Length: 398
Image 1 (cartoon, rainbow, N blue to C red):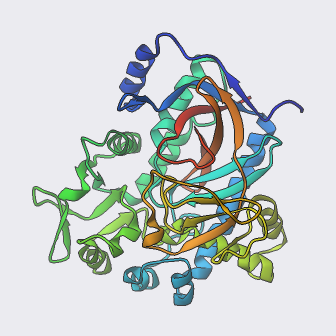
Image 2 (image 1 turned 60 degrees about the horizontal axis):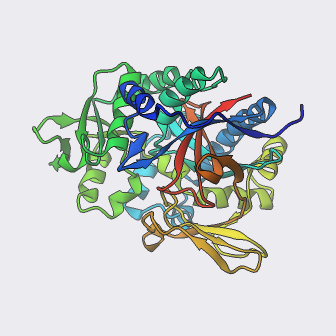
């Protein structure tokens, strides 16, 4: 099949407000945020055979990174190289590692898919990915309005299966009730789980003799939180939280080992093992060469590359270097976590340009992996670096 890999459909609606109100009713209440349009009122479609390859690539890479994470666990030298805070080392060593493919049951790959359909993995958020509401709620509804196929319809079913394994009693984010995106995300996750789960503010949780409690003094035994695990090394209460985990009085979902998958340093571990001919079989090596980018813990490239913190979020800490190795662009909005954690250096792969009503933007293609299954596309449109100022745009299949 021929034709462009991506096509932009439709024009912004004159009745945008009516649609944002409907999206809010569905659970996506930040389509317009602080007088800015986060949701771009158009739809991008991906050619079907490219989507099928992306789905297959995601499944292969999920198995590869799972295998690499198991290789890392117990090796303190590698913990240090990929930036795992020492406060978590013994916990990683002592806790049973989850079953194969289930180190994280709620994760999202971010890919650069070129205009020619070449697929390259940029990173994996295996700990606390957001964008779930945009992918699982808004995208199927928006695609349905235009008769465009969305592969995201099964996300809620996979989510319910994942949560049924851990059955958290509490879900938390910072500023629950006032931070629209994070609050809306955990509300949707709880709703789709089908479980009775109370939602609270992370900042109102406290530890009492190893027991995590909410502001009313109720014990929390099984917690889902949009709280990056690496922050236990930085936050004032991080040591107490780690103690609650070590003593078995608290379980986290995703489990603690998801921090190994979360570290962007794991990409460098995979590439190093690939170059050394270790660990991976022939099929896995083929997938690594095809879908991954060379990555190292030092800037050893000739030509363009990217540097980013091993625990960077929302574009923070990303720097793009040109073919001469000179700094071309750096993120100015996200928090630069490279002051706290080591950096990883990765061969550069630019995002595909798309012509939208907001101008020419670059498309980042996200793929959720829930309960071990690739199951949901997330479109983000912005600049060469996808950060906090980027837009959500529904991504379907043609």
